[in-house]
Image (cartoon, rainbow, N blue to C red; front, side, top):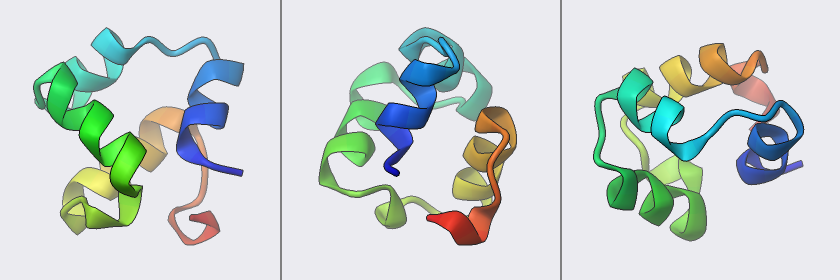
Length: 58
């Protein structure tokens, strides 16, 4: 399952994710499209915490 699907199932908005990660919305969308593994590890772990998934599931 990809991050976008999980985010949509949990009704988490782009704005909430970008504020939580302190990233501009277009930057987060870029990561969502191009591959979440391109993110810095600390930001990726914070994203997993927000979505409630295990880091190793990605």
